[in-house]
Length: 320
Image 1 (cartoon, helix red, strand yellow):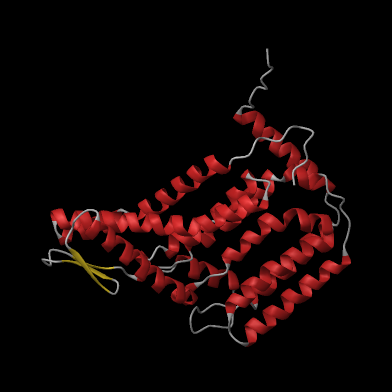
Image 2 (cartoon, rainbow, N blue to C red):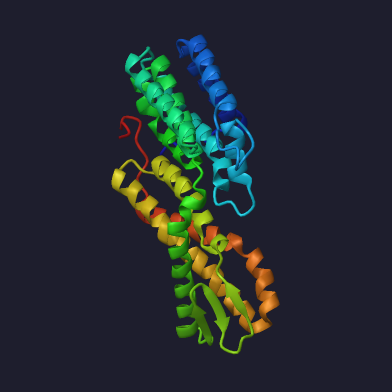
């Protein structure tokens, strides 16, 4: 009879995680240098991080980021979740990190210098997004300086997810408008050809032939918000689930059409509701069906995962 390894209870798993993190913390060298350096680096961006006072009246890049993530109709709300995702993935890789050969690596100072130069540039040209990028580059360089090249290699992913903390804002407009046109065209074509609903399109405006309903697919309805959330989540899932790079890349690329498909289904649902129950009911449900875009995309990711799924590693098999 095959021996089945018993699964760990929640308390046992938590105890193992805490034990591994304690071992990792004890093995980390130069902790005082790291803590002092990190505090100084963060203080720079807290008190001299933002020069665009006309947009957000604060010198703190952290306050500026918070405002960008949580402003009304912001497409960057996913930035609030990225640090938690990175921390969770570092915990997931904790045993790999413990095996590192920890030692100071002087070339990593070049990353800190690069971060400082970028921040000065961002400050001078009043482009805080550059300073946000500089913040994370400098933190990464400080870790490499204190804990070595192996640490940088082991943490490149998930640390790269911090790129999604750089707010997009109005820079997304060249992508948002084509997305609006695409989902509008797909939704109207499906309703007209498949569902036989007499519906027309003028740019991003959808209307019934008898003018029983009219909807404008605004920027907030383009699916950009779902796309910007889905891509980092899919990237994290791909790196955790697969060892082969082509599968990781394929799943991440598929997140784009999956987000479009989810948003198209949401608009089709709104058109159907408006055609049957009228414009006001359609508007009401348009605000309530935002979850459909994300739900369809996540379901698509798991369906693709069934096809791409890899066998579990045996104890003697190293991961790539």
